[in-house]
Image 1: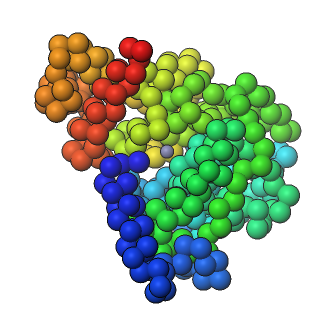
Image 2: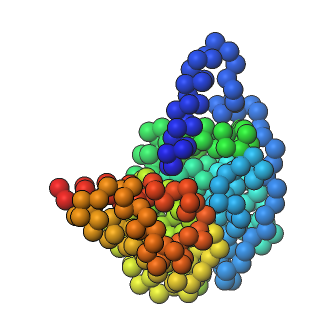
Length: 330
Ligand SMILES: [Zn+2]
C-alpha cells in the first residue's frame, strides 16, 4: 500500500465518521446496488492451456472499473482453473465471458495468489456461477482477508473507481495451499509453490507443468507499486527459485507475460535497492540521502526508470529497504 493511499484511506474514514448522521458517501456495503458491467478485454493465449487477461493500466480508475491486474486461467481436460479473479464481481463476470469464448468447460478451481484486492474480489462472480467451486489460497491470505483486508480493499476499489465495484461481496477462499502441492486435473499437472515472503507472506506461484508456464502473481513485475507487505531479500530468493523452475513463460499479476528475463529483472531491481540500502546504511546515510545514489545505479537508470510508479514510489521503496536492513540486524 502506498503512503498516498493510506492517507486517502484515513481521510475517507474521518470524512465518513464526521458525516455519520448522513447517508454514506458510497455504497460499499450496500449489495442491492450493482455498478455497471465491466467492458470485455479479450484474453491473451500463452500456450494451448494457459491464458490471461491483460490489464493495460497500472492503477485503478473510474474509466477502467478498477481493472489493473491480470486474471489468468488454465484450461484442463477436467475443467478450468482460474488464477486471480480481478477487483470486483463485475470483473469476475467479464473473466467468465472470456473463458466461455475459449471453452464450454466449467470452472473447477479458483486460486488467489495473495491477499491484495485486485487478486480476490472477483471471487464473488465465480461462486455465483459455480456454487460448488473451491477457492484456494495460502492460510495467511485467508487470515488477512478475514481480519479486515476484505473490507479495506472494497473501500479502496470503490474510492478509486468512483463506486465502480458496487455489489461486490468479499468472498473468502475456503481451501488452503501452502506450497508443495501437486494437483492432477486430467491432462494437466499443477504444482503450487511458496518460496517464502516475497510480495506478501501469502504468495502462491502456480506452475502448469506440461506447458512450462508459471503464474507468478505479484512476486515479479516491471512496475514500482507496493512493497509494504513484502520483502526485498525474500523476493530475491523467490526470483531465483522461480527461474530455477525452468519455465518458458511467466505470467504476471501486472503487465505482459515474458520469459525468465522477468525473474532476472525483478531480482536485479530488488538487489540494487536492498544491497545499496545496506551499504549506505553502514555508511550512516539516511534514506533520503541514499535515494539519489541508488537512482543513479545503472539498473535503475537504464531499466527501472521506465517502469510505471518509478518517479512517485521509489522513495517509499528505499525507506522500506532501509527498514528491512535494520530489522535483519536484530
Ligand atoms: Zn499485490
